[in-house]
Image 1 (cartoon, rainbow, N blue to C red):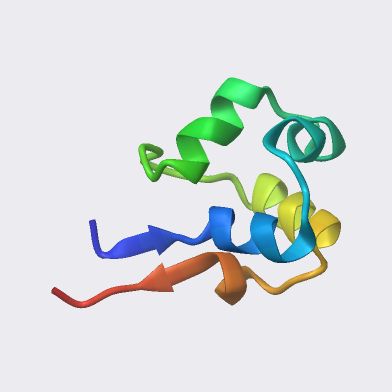
Image 2 (image 1 turned 180 degrees about the horizontal axis):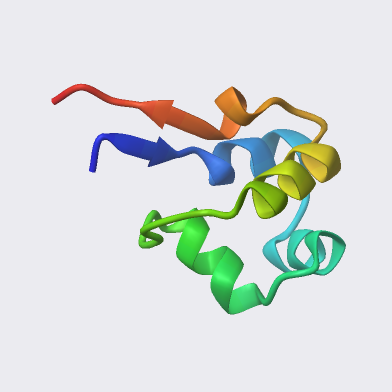
Length: 68
Protein backbone atom coordinates (compact mmCIF):
# COMPACT_ATOMS: atom_id res chain seq x y z
CA UNK A 1 0.00 0.00 0.00
CA UNK A 2 1.52 3.36 -0.97
CA UNK A 3 0.11 5.13 2.12
CA UNK A 4 2.20 4.34 5.22
CA UNK A 5 0.99 4.93 8.76
CA UNK A 6 3.83 6.00 11.05
CA UNK A 7 1.79 5.85 14.21
CA UNK A 8 4.35 3.74 16.06
CA UNK A 9 7.03 6.38 15.38
CA UNK A 10 4.90 9.18 16.81
CA UNK A 11 3.91 7.06 19.79
CA UNK A 12 7.57 6.37 20.55
CA UNK A 13 8.46 10.07 20.22
CA UNK A 14 5.66 11.03 22.62
CA UNK A 15 6.33 8.05 24.93
CA UNK A 16 2.69 6.96 24.94
CA UNK A 17 1.41 3.40 25.06
CA UNK A 18 -1.19 1.86 22.79
CA UNK A 19 -3.59 1.55 25.72
CA UNK A 20 -3.16 5.17 26.80
CA UNK A 21 -3.50 6.51 23.26
CA UNK A 22 -6.61 4.43 22.57
CA UNK A 23 -8.23 5.74 25.74
CA UNK A 24 -7.38 9.39 24.98
CA UNK A 25 -8.52 9.14 21.35
CA UNK A 26 -11.69 7.27 22.22
CA UNK A 27 -11.23 4.17 20.06
CA UNK A 28 -10.69 0.55 20.98
CA UNK A 29 -7.21 -0.86 21.44
CA UNK A 30 -8.01 -3.35 18.68
CA UNK A 31 -8.85 -0.59 16.17
CA UNK A 32 -5.78 1.41 17.14
CA UNK A 33 -3.66 -1.71 16.73
CA UNK A 34 -5.07 -2.20 13.22
CA UNK A 35 -4.02 1.37 12.38
CA UNK A 36 -0.60 1.00 13.99
CA UNK A 37 0.11 -2.25 12.15
CA UNK A 38 -0.97 -0.75 8.80
CA UNK A 39 -3.86 -3.19 8.34
CA UNK A 40 -6.51 -0.45 8.06
CA UNK A 41 -8.05 0.32 4.71
CA UNK A 42 -9.33 3.75 5.80
CA UNK A 43 -9.27 6.24 8.65
CA UNK A 44 -11.94 8.74 9.61
CA UNK A 45 -10.92 12.38 9.63
CA UNK A 46 -12.32 12.67 13.14
CA UNK A 47 -10.01 9.86 14.31
CA UNK A 48 -7.03 11.41 12.53
CA UNK A 49 -7.86 14.79 14.07
CA UNK A 50 -8.02 13.31 17.57
CA UNK A 51 -4.74 11.40 17.04
CA UNK A 52 -3.07 14.66 16.00
CA UNK A 53 -4.48 16.46 19.06
CA UNK A 54 -3.28 13.82 21.51
CA UNK A 55 0.12 13.31 19.84
CA UNK A 56 0.55 17.05 19.20
CA UNK A 57 1.45 16.55 15.56
CA UNK A 58 0.24 17.14 12.02
CA UNK A 59 -1.46 14.53 9.79
CA UNK A 60 1.71 14.39 7.69
CA UNK A 61 3.61 13.22 10.76
CA UNK A 62 1.38 10.13 10.88
CA UNK A 63 0.58 9.51 7.20
CA UNK A 64 3.19 9.18 4.47
CA UNK A 65 2.83 8.50 0.75
CA UNK A 66 5.44 6.01 -0.46
CA UNK A 67 6.06 5.53 -4.16
CA UNK A 68 7.10 1.96 -4.99
